Amino acid sequence: MPALIYLTAKPTGRIEKTMDRAMKIRRVSALVAMCVIGMAAARPSKATGTTIEPMPARLETQFALSAVPPALRDRATVYLLDPKKGYHLSQQGTSGVTCLVERTVWEWADFRDDIYIPLCYDAVGTKAHLRVIMDTAALRARGLSPATLKAEVEKRYRDKTYKAPEKAGLSYMVAPVMRALGPPDMKVHTMPMPHLMFYAPFITNEDIGATPDLSDHASLLNPFIDKQGNAEQSYVIQLIGEAEKAQILADEKPLLDELCAYRDVLCLAHAKH
Image (cartoon, rainbow, N blue to C red):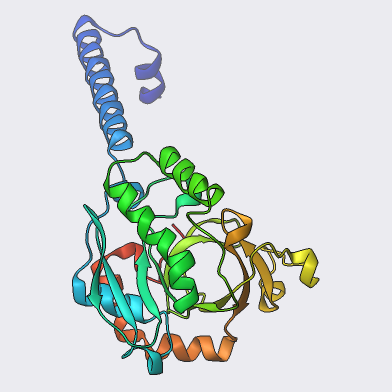
């Protein structure tokens, strides 16, 4: 039983020194590993950074315009984001519809670099809701903190600088992908969720008899209310049908491929992050 004898015999001086050196090496290795792990944990993740990088102009234009049906794109106005200044006019349209990619959501009181919400407003919404989005980008560029920015927007609603839309209208959000808070847990996800948003200030789900359940996708196929920050920014949400959604994804595959190549958080293969 040589192995048993070796394990139970008292180590010689040479063996003791060898074992001591081995223990020291293991302790140093463990400390190095802990430092590496600590450095990795401390290194900021690109997906949760706070500094927005500008998108290539052509790609951002295509992404913004994907929020409206193709027949409306040629006559739509497009704004592009300069993260250091805010939005600037890139394409002047004639239809009253205005499109952009929203990168900062004021009501979250949180700055991220991985939010991408392509949307287009009609003429009424451009004067009301889109104005708030554009001002939010400018305020962030000026260096306001998330909490200060949120408080400023809320103050502007209170003093009537911002108002609810003056009449009925809608926002187009039929893009093939967006990255925002979403069901089932209202955390940030990359998702294909083309839909329309009809202005419904001060309207609640109870008013229209809606009973949406974020954990049950089927319940979201019926119209429901989404209050975005305050009652003035309430909308009736109507998701696009599954067949129409599949067609949008097929038609917009070249855009989806380009967005995915540009940044992995926009890849539909990574549906959750």
